[in-house]
Length: 268
Ligand SMILES: O=C(O)CCC(=O)C(=O)O
Image 1 (cartoon, rainbow, N blue to C red):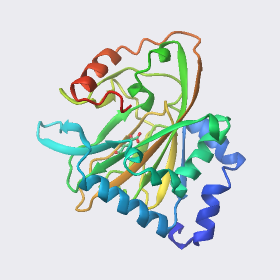
Image 2 (cartoon, rainbow, N blue to C red; image 1 turned 180 degrees about the horizontal axis):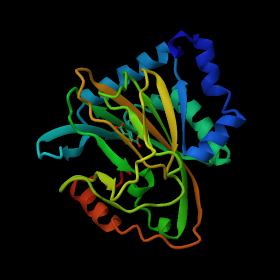
Image 3 (cartoon, rainbow, N blue to C red; image 1 turned 60 degrees about the vertical axis):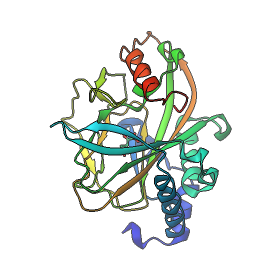
Image 4 (cartoon, rainbow, N blue to C red; image 1 turned 90 degrees about the horizontal axis):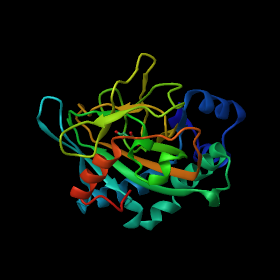
């Protein structure tokens, strides 16, 4: 159905903001499906830039090994906008920032944003494990201050049950959960003991997007299909607020060490 929307309707979808029932659903579930978010022209522009970024080979392997020990490459490119600042001018970025400001109840100018590409080659064979985005954030102030952020995620190819669609645990955005490392070397984190009984998978077509809270427990499937799955995530952060209780986030020293080893510090 979303493919039948006119370009105008798609433009309005990303510029008019969320209606009351969508805000209520986001606050209840910790995520929201946005449907078709960019028109075909924008989608093609984004794909061209994405492919050029991949061609320059500036990404790093985010998760190195499958559970059975085989090497797989799931490529992540942090801050592609540093290479191609025009990414900030896309409907996706502008619309995403507008929706993030609405959900976090701050002016757009009060948001800090950055993005990353998550690229799954055909037959990657490795999922993105259950995690909360905020588990990756190293800032020491987050021990005593609670981050407020949302991520908007768009797929530039079909993201199906077999090519790596998103999975969310509804209502899981209410607290920080313990994380451990997903493999021996990389900086991939996963929830230590995820309760995924209520989780669902959300296949999306190219150009469709979702939004999630920085504490929503989510994952994405492996790409066992024959086509690539290019996804692009934008994170928008508002000022953190004081926490009632300090949060120890015990995996952070090791995460910092792994990032230092992989020269990723400064990027996140
Ligand atoms: O694209 C993926 O495979 C996972 C993306 C994700 O977890 C995120 O952007 O927070």
